[in-house]
Structure formats: C-alpha cells, structure tokens
Length: 382
Image (tube, rainbow, N blue to C red):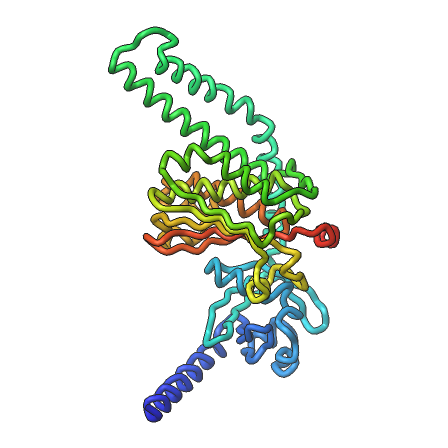
C-alpha cells in the first residue's frame, strides 16, 4: 500500500510539474489561488499584466488584485463561462479583465486576460442593459393591452364549452376545447413573461416592511390547493424553528418567489409529497456561500421546497436560473419554467438573498432560498 501511495505521489508530482510548465508559457496571466484567497503561484505573464514581481503578487490576497476576486472565481466555475471584472495593480492602477477559473487539487487555477482596450464595448453593453430594462418597463405598462384579448378568447371559448352560446356538436366542442386550452397556456406564459419583465425593469421597487413569514408561506400553499389536490399530493410544512418570528423584507416579492418555486415542484411531481421547511441556515453554509459577509445565521431565513418528483437532469441544471441562455438550446419546452426561475433569481437578488437548486433524477428536486430578515441589514445595504 505504501509503494502504491508513493507511486501516486510521484504521478501527481510529475503531473503538477508538467501542468505548471504549460501554464508558464500561456499567453494569459495565470494564478493558482487557494480557497481562502491566498496566491501560491503566478506565471511570467501575470507579472506583466499586474505590473509586479512574482514575490510581490504572491504577498497579496486575490481580492486585493481582482474586485471580489474569489466571488468571481466561484461564479466562473459555477457557470463554466468567463467573468468580466475590475482589477488593480499593486500601484492601484485600475483595468478590466476577463477571468476563467477551474478547480485544481483543492485550489483554483485562474487565467486572466487584460481587456481594458474593450472598455468602449463594455460601456455599450451597459447601455444595452439599461435599454433592455426600459424596454421591459414599457412591456409591463402595456401588460393589460396584451392580456385583455387573450382573456377574451379564454372567456368566450369557455362560455361555448359551458353551452352559454347554445348547443355545439362534438367536432365543434373538440376544437373549442383546443382553443380554450391553448389560450389559457398563452395567458399563463404572458403572465410569467410580464412578471419577469417587471422584476428586471426600472419599475421594480422594493416595499420593505415587517410581516409574519409563516402566514405568507401558508397563504402561498393555500393558493395552490387545486393543483395539489388534482395530483393527490401531500404537503408537509415545517416552520417550527421560526414560528412567531416577524421578518423585515418585501412580502410581495417573497410571495412571487415561493409561488414560482412551488408551482415548479408541483409540475415535477406526479405522486408523493412536497415539503416546505423554513429555518435559520447553519453557519457553515453561510460561510460557504460567501454572499452574506459578517451576518449571523439568526439574521437570515432559509426556505427549502423539496419534492419527490422526476428530478432534473444535469443538462437541465446548467443555466437553470438564466432564461436567456435557454433560448439558444434546441429543446425549448421548459422555457416557461426558465422564465419563472429567472424571475425568482432576480427577485432573490433584489432581496439581497440567493436561490439555488439541487436535484437527482427520479429522486426529486430541492429549491433553496436564503434572504436577510432584519431591518439593520437592509439599512446597511440600501
């Protein structure tokens, strides 16, 4: 066993040496960064890009050289895409970079490219983002004009099905039911799309107030009673740890988040149960997320919605909360789900929180939401 371990040691050592030899000659700046942000190795290009010697660069924390550097590393790894960030030389000269990160033996390999020359393009992208927000605001303002004709089709087709317009034959009944179903589906899609547009638009405003979160959760469950009963599902609610706890947040936005997540869980579950649990997150999870700096778990609430449904495949998990990324995929059947989760993601960020999903095929899905619930937190971050 010792000989085998020694062989593995030499294998890893040789692999590490070869990898560093490759990284040394890359045209991009390369850093090996520990999970706590310490820099353990840099290549020659890094000394050029960051205008400092290797010993000097290794004396810095990665966040000192890259704005929210470890957070950007986590994002690049999670999304498997480059991340744009601001960077600083030891002499405090600021520039823009494109950052790619990969996990490597308990640390991170980070490649960095100076894209300062592209700042005009970045500015243009920011302007495009603002334009999209204004465009979404216009869409929200026109929502009644968009939904009214669809509502008329739904209403009159249902009236024909109910016989209010007189008796119709079997073939006509079949066609009217198709019209009614498709118009209902279209109305649902437009409602979710407008909900997403509102969350992303300049019209959105947080209405922070104190409310009973247990009552809010119970109301969301009651609003889904018909869908739950139609599938004969069991709903388990565990709010024992936070019962009688008043929270400070935006109740309307929280309701929208919970409604979207619960709707999706119901659609993913044909038999079995759905469990909702509200509790304080544990300290280890809070540290791991790196979203809430110096925040006690008691100042946060975690709401988890778990189902016993079909679960989500690994390919579906990639970009799950990013509806724009779903448009480029061949299979667009879950676009409404992506829009709902996109709204959830935007609103979670609006509430200074985070949302994520865990899933296993044929075993179910768990959606997790953590938001701050104390007035002092929101006052500090306004």
